[in-house]
Image (cartoon, rainbow, N blue to C red; front, side, top):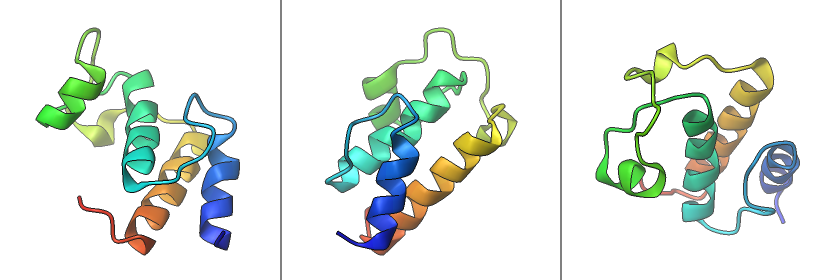
Length: 88
């Protein structure tokens, strides 16, 4: 297991996310689950299918109110997604 993967997994432990991120899909889901919990309105069919938009409040991802911890977790997940060359 790479150090980046370990950091992602440790960061995800404090969030409502899968116990471990084994695939790009796991990483995508964990990252977007954070946004959903904070009221993001998904635009892609994948996001809408996975999370829906009921109760969403923010159309722009930059407007979503995230804690510093959530921002760090998202950054770690994105780094791992890039390292794994996950599709965007």
